Length: 359
Ligand code: ADP
Ligand code: MG
Image 1 (tube, helix red, strand yellow):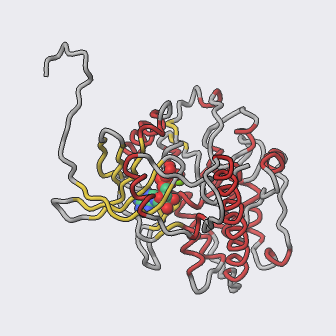
Image 2 (tube, protein in one colour; image 1 turned 45 degrees about the horizontal axis):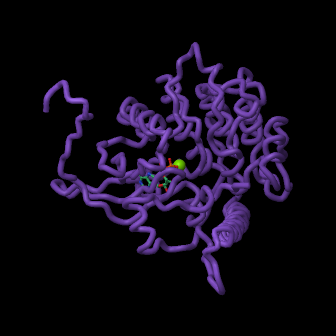
C-alpha cells in the first residue's frame, strides 16, 4: 500500500477464533465464549458493536490500554490475550472466567460466613491496591464486574470490565468530572463533580462489602434522586437489625471507613488491607447465606418485573405490540436466535442495564 494513500490502512486477517455461547451482557457489549482455532484454547471475547460506540470509542481504547498495562501483573486482574476488529465489531479476547459472577456464585453455595466475605474483599482490595499503585482508578467496581476464574471452591476472584477505568494523571484527576458508573456504587464526590480519584474505588468497596454481608445495597431507595441524596449524606444504616445482628463490629467499622464522605479522609487501599476486618483471624460461626440469598433474590425478582414492565411500555410506545404478547423477565430469559443474529451485526441490548434500576 502506498504511503501517501488517503484511505486508512485496513489490514484484513482471517479470524483465528470461533465464537460460542453468550456469557454475559454489558451496557455496550456482549461477551461470548470463544475458542482459538489453532490451539483449541478457550477464551472470552468481549464483542463491542462499533455503531453503538459512536463517540465512545475512547472507552474501548481506554479499556485496551489499561488491560495491556496491568493484566499480567496481578492474579486477581483479568488478562487480555488478544485484540482485533472486524468491519462491524471490536473484539477483546481475555481469559475465560468460568466461575461466574460474584453474587450468583455466593447464592449457589451451601453456606456463607463473614470470613468468606472477608476473603472476597481481601482479593478485590489487593487487586485495587495494585491498580492504584499503577496509577489506575477502576471507577466501576460492583459485583457484576467481579468474576471467578474457575468453578472451584478456592478459585481466584478477578476484576473485569475496565471500560471506565482511567489512568490517573495525578495532577489532573481532581478536574475530571464525567459522570459514570452505577449509581448505587458511586461515591459522593462523583455527584458533586469534585473528584474521580482512587478514593471512588474504596467507596465502591464499602458498598460491595455492605452488600456481601446482607444481600442489599446501603443506598437503595425508590428513585435515583433519593439514592443520590442518600449517597451525598452517606445516609445508610445497619438495618433491619435482624440482618446485621450477627455481623462483626470490625465489619461495620470497615464499611464506615470506606463510606466516609470526604475522599481525603477515606481509607486508602493499603490502609483498608490492614484494617482488623481483613487482618483478624476471627472465626465467624453464623451462616449469613439464608438472609443474603433472600434479600438478593427479592431485589432481583423486583428488578426483573420492572424490566418487563418497561420492555412492554417500550413496545407499546413503538406501536409494535398488538394483542397478547408475553415477555419473560430479561434476567430469566434464554437468548433467542434473534438475539444471536443481532449480536453479530446490531448488538442486542437489554431494555435496561441489567440488574441496575433505570428510571
Ligand atoms: P460491560 O463493559 O459492557 O459491562 P463486562 O466486561 O462487564 O462488559 O462484561 C459483561 C458481562 O459478561 C459480565 O458481567 C460477565 O457476566 C460476563 N463476562 C465478562 N467477561 C467475562 C470473562 N472473561 N469470562 C466470562 N464471563 C465474562
Ligand atoms: Mg460490566
